[in-house]
Length: 190
Image (cartoon, rainbow, N blue to C red; front, top):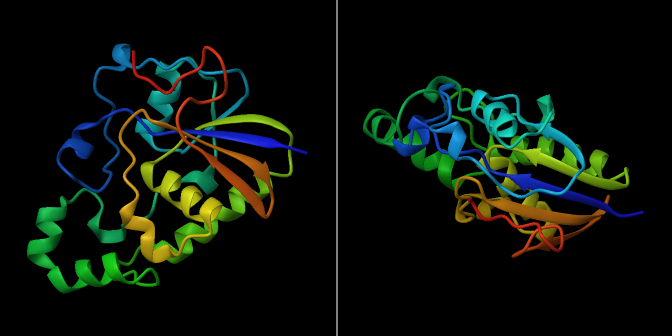
């Protein structure tokens, strides 16, 4: 049994441009969002930007709570610069220790476990799932697929509107880079 999961990062938002922890803002220029995607079950993170990106892509995606972004606790809506100025030690601790959650939100370790649970459950199905998800969800899936440590979480860059594909099933995932899904399907922005 093979499962394919194509993860699409959301379109750019004003928060992303300002390196701000998600504050629920809308995507910029929805009319410019276009990817050529294969058919499949569509899901999204429940955030505004992921739901709007899915809609702009023409997907009828259901929101999956297990794909929510990393809970930044009291830092939500603040820029990295603001947090760094107000709580420099806490920010360094959070960025260097996957088990830390000084902001009162979710640790990277807990977040990765939640995303892994979603992926492993999804992997028990056959067919293709297209998931419009927060960049940190893509990071967690990549780490799980490669068996990489959680300390590598912040070392995976996920630009807006990029596609990442994993294939396989519970306990064994392969990461596919480059063209997504086969002929006529690409992760390029039109």
